[in-house]
Length: 351
Image 1 (cartoon, rainbow, N blue to C red):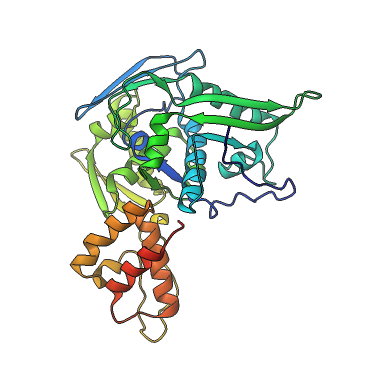
Image 2 (cartoon, rainbow, N blue to C red):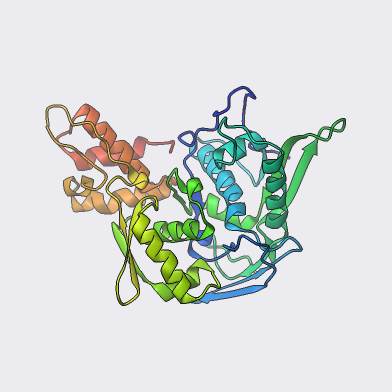
C-alpha cells in the first residue's frame, strides 16, 4: 500500500504547524449536511434534499459521523492537497501518526501532547467514519457515485504486539472524497477553525465560507441555513444560537448579521484569515495593498483571468492574493500590477 507518510520527530511537539499545511475542506461536505452536529450518538437515518441534490445518511452501531470526526478528513485533505501542490504523487491511502494529527486538530494538552483519552476518541471517530454510509447524487469532480459508500473505505491500526501501543494509523479515503481532491474542489479554512467550540459554529462557518466564496458578503434565509446545517433543533432555538454568534462576533473570517425578516448576512472581516492583510507599507509607493483592495488595481481582464488560473492550479484564490499583496508591500508596486499578478500565479506551484 502506497501512502503519504508524514516525517515526524517525537521530540518536536509542533512539527505539524498549520502554516505548513493550510486547512482544506471539500466543496460537497461544506455545502451539504453530511455530518451530524449532535454531541450525543446520532442513530437516526437522515434524508436531505435541496435544489435537486439528494443525500441519505445511514448510521452504524456507533452512530453517524460527527463534525468532530470530520476534522480527521480535513487533516487528510489538507495533507494530500499540500503534497499534490508540491507535485508529489498521492493516492487514497494515508498512513499517519496520531500525535501529528491530534496536534493539527488542536486536541492535545497545553504542552502539545496527546494521551490515552485523545487516542481512544480518535479510534472512535475512525469507527464512525468507516461505519457511516452515504447514498447521494451529489457529484465530486463531475462524477456521481451511485452505490452506497462510506466516508472512508477502510481503517487500519498498527499496534506494537508486546504492549499494545499504536504505532501508526491508516485510512483509505472514499473515492467520493478523493475525487474532490483530484478535482481541486476544496477551499482553504481559517487556521482557527479547529478552535470553534461547538459543532453548530463549525457548520455555520463552513457554510459561510462555501457560500461567500470570493465575494465580500453573502445572504441566506434562516430556514435555509438551518436545513443546510442539518440540525433537528427548532427554528427559534437556532435563531437564538445565531444571535449569540452575532453578539460574540468570534466566527473566523466573517461577521454575521440577522435582520427582522430572518435573513442572515455574512460579511468578510477586514482581517480575514481567508486572506490576511499585510501590515507592511509599500516602499516608495506609499500605498498599503490588501486582499480587500487589490481588485481596484487589477484591470477587468485580470479580475476574470486570475481566479480561473488559480482554480486550474488548485490553489485557493484568497491565499494567492494574500501572498501577492505581501510581495507588493515588501517590494513595491510594478507599473502593471495586473500583468504582474498573472505572472505571479503562473509561477506559483505550492500553496
